[in-house]
Amino acid sequence: LKRKLRNLREESMRNPAPEILDKLRRFENAARDVISCRIQKIVQAALSESLPQEFLEVMTFEERALLNEISRLINEWRRHILEV
Image (cartoon, rainbow, N blue to C red):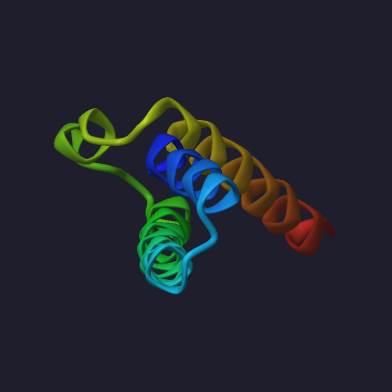
């Protein structure tokens, strides 16, 4: 995703033809949609008590790092709220 986006941006700099710019715009929109869907799944997973191994296996390194950080923040917040 990142590599394709970088390539399209470089291509649009070399050749700013309307069809190239439109292709870049459409790809950026599609990339945002994919990222939003992945973030929703990661947040739902962070809220989950347990995760299937298959879910973790298909995640990228960056997605697992985000999952770990969100999980840590949620757990920290829960502990803070539940402290007596």
